Length: 91
Image (cartoon, rainbow, N blue to C red; front, side, top):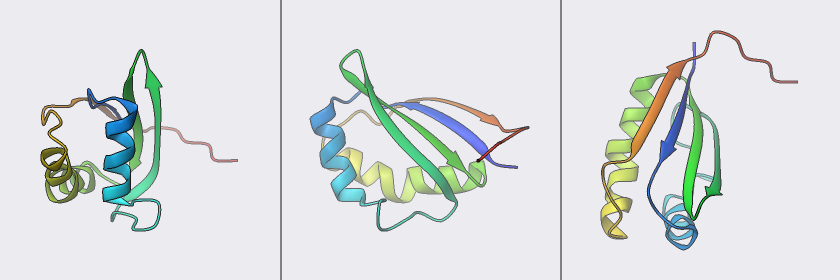
C-alpha cells in the first residue's frame, strides 16, 4: 500500500518556487510519485506527498531533491512524517 509523507522543508515560498522549477515534477514525474501538493504555513512551505513506497520516496530525496536543496542553499535536514495508508478514497 502507498505511503503519505508530510515534509517540512524550512524554506520560504520563493525558494520553493525555484526548487519546483528545477525539479519540474509537474512534467517529469518521479518514479513512484502518486501525488504532490504544497502550501505555505506561517511563512514556510510544507509538502504533502503520496508515494507507491518508502523506497521510491527515499530515491527521490537522494537522487533528485538533495542536489536541488544544495543548489539553492536550503537545509538538508527536512522534518518528515511518514505513515502507511490503510484506507484511501479517490472520487
